[in-house]
Length: 144
Image (tube, rainbow, N blue to C red; front, side):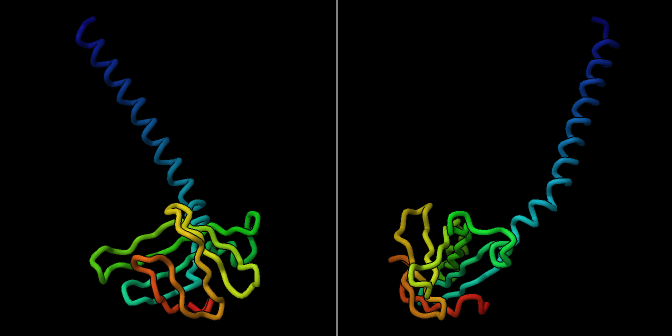
């Protein structure tokens, strides 16, 4: 194959790659607003313990009733702030349900296999886990 044939093939391959790249960029830009709406979270509980602070976030859509919980379970986030121990702030997915007596919420840290934690809706003392989340004082649900 002559040199000019290889140059033309390389040029055409480059043009195809540019089209693929621009298509991917357009797809990401089109999907970004939808992802941002789905990801809007609101802090509903804030707790402070001797070693760490904890926060629980739920999707805004679940609070407004726009998206009802699936089988009574809300997928939320649990933030464990270990900045004082120089370990940073970690977020993990959790399942949130209402307690059977309707006086608290139950948070299940299913990714770590920890037992469910019940947090009183009116606030109070809570033990999240045995490493950093013991004797945490939590505020009233939704008062954040």
